[in-house]
Length: 407
Length: 217
Image (cartoon, rainbow over all chains, first blue to last red; front, side):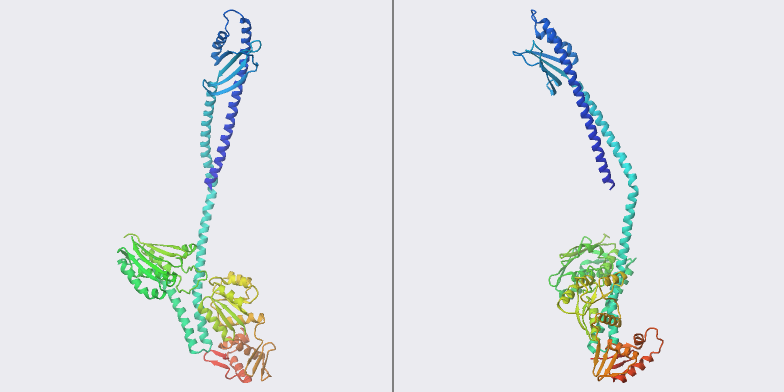
């Protein structure tokens, strides 16, 4: 904002400055040239009249030569930077003189006047040349000085404008910073509210079923199979709530937790996870492969196992039945779990690790899960000093990278 | 009885609501997302819709905007914020039930909305007993039976919540009101009288440690 104002104001200033200096320069040189032109025209007239008088006196005398006379004139006028030439023509011409300005000619800058002498010497053609090199040089000098002044002024103006804008914009910048802070706080408050809302929903939904079916069992007279079904619902939902409670407890313990680090062979861990997930994988028809560079990491084994389980479970849920493929990799201290499942919309990515965040607005629990899995994974990564990164393309797949720092 | 559409994506809660409403004789149909709900509304006649707000494909707010005032709607939601309730009611919902809800509360609210749109039953017949809610009269073999106002209210409460056990306290609250300081034995006395007058010894069951239930198969 400040830079933009600076540039705009400064450009406007420069434009006005250079335009006015340009106009002044053009006016100055024009008037100088006009003055020279008038002066030389007057001089030409006076020369031609004196010359005509001299010719009329000398005319007819023996040994008379018009060239000699003009040479005399020329010698006299040469100290005024004027050169004169006379030509004799067969026919008389009009006495009207022609004034031309020759710039950068063979003999430098000059004002040239060519005209016939007045009658009866109309067959003489007088050429008058005033050298104006000195005047042009003077004009160029003035131009240079002015240009120098203008450059200095524009530099000074730039500094002055910068300082002025800094002063003017200081309170505004403070306000902008304050506003940014307010927005940040608002976002924080919103995400807290969101958490409370989500948590309430996550707890209320199973509670509704548990209470409802218990009441149903108590108040209705039911056949045995319906009693079993209702009890099943109650137990299912209770198990779900227990999962939430366990995960929350785990999250709470992980805060300020320092893991007992041991050297773990990642290949063995991958193998173990693949083995224990294989019934689930077979059921859904999802293929899982792994690849390591044979390296090890320093970590607490049960935590990393739980992290991998969570990530792979999510990957299995994301995959299409009978077409899914999951890959676990360990390369350069990085554990990568990637799948070719449904992917995650880009706007949901930054919120994925928030507790109880669900991509699905309806918060559907059809896939089960507590909504805490990725929060837990992030926490586990953090206590190991590792960073979890999620990249995803909708309908193409998701890739989760855990960067472990070198021991 | 009424035809009720239940649109709720949580399978357990959907089943629960369905089972509850079927106990008192309503016919229920379950759908699990907003689009299916709209489709069902277009294709069949319903007297009432129980609508969850957070549903896949189309949320409850969007559904009610499509349906408008054609069919009475009760929202069923875990969102208890006043703003949500106000929004739901402003969109034209007839009521708003917050999860978790009480079975009797659900029945009462459904009944109340049905009564408002004149879809509630005006009479109830069981064997040779006929109860007319409009004129507040009870007939046995077409002969009017003498009844006190409290006795009639008790019969009505039992019928409206049939197949559901009602505790003595609940019955006291429903028939005599919150501010009644009587003994729960008042209920027993009235139930005894009802059983005698209507010959309902086997119909009004005593539920051990709870209360009474009018059983209709």
